[in-house]
Amino acid sequence: MFKIFCVTHRGLCSDFSEQLALIAAARPDGIILREKDLDEAAYTDLARRALDICKQSGTPLVLHSFVGTALGLGADSIHLPLRALRELGEDRKQAFAAIGASVHSPEEAAEAEALGAAYVIAGHIFETDCKRGLAGRGLGYLRQVCEAVRIPVYAIGGIGKENIAAVAAAGASGACIMSGFMKSPDPQRLLDELRKQTERNIE
Picture 1 (cartoon, rainbow, N blue to C red):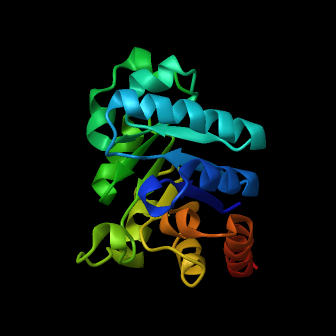
Picture 2: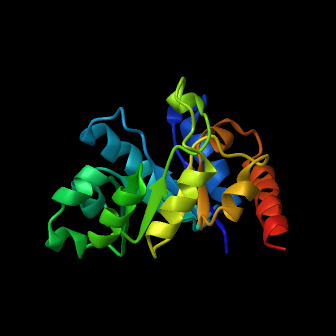
Picture 3: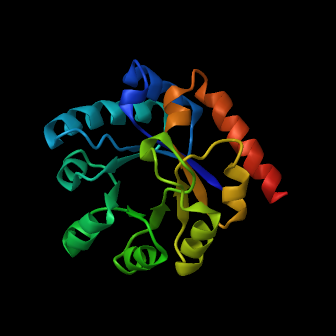
């Protein structure tokens, strides 16, 4: 089944806790708490609140970058930049049920898989405000990443209901969406529309 994830960016909404609760209640396949501008102390406070919110809906929350925070809060999964995965010791790897990594080439994807990643996020596929001025790497790039590994590849960057079917057709196991979820007044409707597009592609 094609999976759909939310990647957070609290700067895109007026009330992050309220928006996160709406998204979690819609039950995407997971929410990745990215928030790269925070130091570890601030991120830990936010992660603690986010875990409580997601627990109420039973929606998985994946913490990002701060391994110590994830371990301290009992999180069972974490998403890392590839450079951080390279430096992660085997003892800490074993503490998580799943570790993901962000990659930007087929070679990086293969390296992440060899380092024990359970999945990779490949970006950015289409032009996006988060990478303003940079052209997307495109669906051909996404296909190459998918062909380079046996683990799931989740696409990110400029993905919405108008192009998510093409992402699925390119071989991705799922898609990560930031702006769409963080700005949506009705995350449940958005998720339903996205799922409808991918199911149509599979049929």
